[in-house]
Length: 288
Image (cartoon, rainbow, N blue to C red; front, side):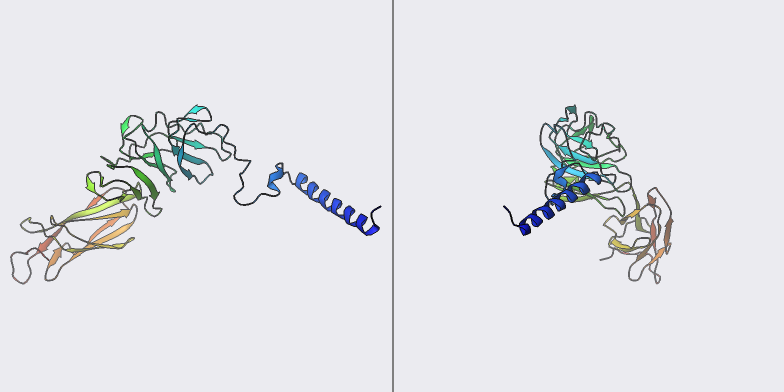
């Protein structure tokens, strides 16, 4: 017969176990695995049913907890979804997000824009819903192609990574390419986002000849410095809605106007400078 001390220990342990079980039930916790769940355990509340019929290469999370997936699959939970789909927070298919015929080849990278929830897609595809989009595209929040985002000829090789810069919506892409929209870019490039405009122009002599190498300074909501190219062209990419000032400077040269001001615009802005005669000189030679 167990000693009195052992009996007390057994009764105490049973009472403790019953108290824990009662706490679990009254707290509304159904899954026993939740009691001992540890980081890395499979979450039984996220049930993607039968899942996808082929590989998933990319995952992105929306601010509302919904999940964008991309890959090689053509079905999700038995429903046609060609290489991109959206799941609800519990893993079920979100039928409100329908990319139609979608991409004609695999999706390798995804990013959700924080400002409007649109989805940037990278991969090795050449069309999206029958529209030419070489390896980079953007979808609206319902899965349709966003035709306002047009990367031109796109990338000439796979896009394996995408990221959206929250400040101005610029899109960073990385992958196995050497050209983006016919511009040399070795493996990484930045595309203009929906939240950006361009401020650009030319610096020329009074005769109309361009001046390269002029220092051009942007101030205001964003600060930046660049120099004109051989065609006398300068360009800044800035967030919409800001107030900006642009000035040009070079030794021994005065420019007209002295300052260009741009304010609260949502469209691209253009502003030119003219190099004026200095100290009786009638011409300004190219700067070095």
